[in-house]
Amino acid sequence: MFSRRNLSLKICRIGSRFCTTNLQCSSSEAVQGKATTSYTPPVLRPDFTIPTKLDYRQWFPMHMRVQMMKMEGKLRAMDLIIEVHDARIPITGRNDNFQKSLYSIRPHILVLNKMDLIPLKKYKQQVEDFHYERGIKKIIWTDCKARTKNAMDDLKAAMLEVLTTEPRYNREQKAEYQVMVVGIPNVGKSSLVNALRFSALGIQKKAVAVGARPGMTVRVQNKVRIMDIPPVYMTDTPGVLTPTYRNIHEAMKLALCDLILQTQTNIYYLADYLLYWLNKTRNYSYVKLLNLPDGPSDDIALALKKACIANDWRISARLPGGQVEDRWDIDGAAERFVQLYREGNFHDACLDKDILKQWSM
Ligand SMILES: Nc1nc2c(ncn2[C@@H]2O[C@H](COP(=O)(O)OP(=O)(O)OP(=O)(O)O)[C@@H](O)[C@H]2O)c(=O)[nH]1
Ligand SMILES: [Mg+2]
Image (cartoon, rainbow, N blue to C red; front, side, top):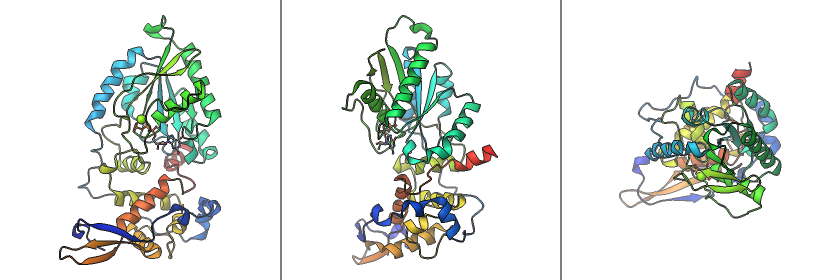
């Protein structure tokens, strides 16, 4: 094992460059059931832990508190709150403060976006039962990247139903309806505004900016017209996380889905959590994807090193004396492993399946 401290300033990756298409197994190989039967399960650690010096709870940038206050300030002008969340973690990571400050005061629809990244048929009913039992009134599943027409039609119908039937408090005289879209970072709030606008008004051009990294929208936006009849306006907002997390699993699931700033996560522990979670849910498709010669393992150091050797993933590092040394690119392998998850290569990416299973037992 190399020490990361010894790496000099100039580090460049050599060897075969990572390419998901090279590493992708066929969809049948990636199916969890098949992977389960073809390998001997590894010995699992009892629970996932990280060194205590790493405080995973410090993931709440201060600007979120300020923006949350601005959102509360706009509430009087709103008829409906749409909460967007990531379908890969349909239970975990929702911000409780939204409930206290926003949904308890205005009608609420929960949109589970990125439905394209989970096997929807398997989870739809279970997730809906879970949330309806706990008082959520309406859930819509969307794919705002593909702008799936049926999903957009479902969402428009649900919005219109709420807008035209729920009490409007001090807003009865206003002809136009106003909707605020909220959620934690990078779940697709801005994509939803653009997709709805395209679906209802046929406007292709993006009204609000979308980005692959969390924190794209940094402040509450100006309202955007998304429907003509009746006139409906939508206000996009920045992602707001809860200041603290209930446990390490919640924090790691959010980070795996890329919903937390990259600078505030540690890729090595993230890869370790992914390995832990895949083994726990008996999904051994990573063996093929990483070309691991000896089957599954619950040891991240060993798995990443074997992946480096099998794929010839190296870095060359300049040492203090000026010599150049080749080393296995362990951090690069960790990044590639996590990226495989984020790009949807593990067939079943619903990270809350363990919670749902427990709940339905
Ligand atoms: N696979 C998939 N990706 C999506 C979907 N919706 C949005 N994305 C992607 O998710 C990323 C984040 O989208 P945004 O719309 O910027 O998310 P946001 O919630 O506004 O993010 P912040 O402004 O940072 O809080 C982008 O790369 C989108 O292309 C979806 O339904 N499926
Ligand atoms: Mg945004």
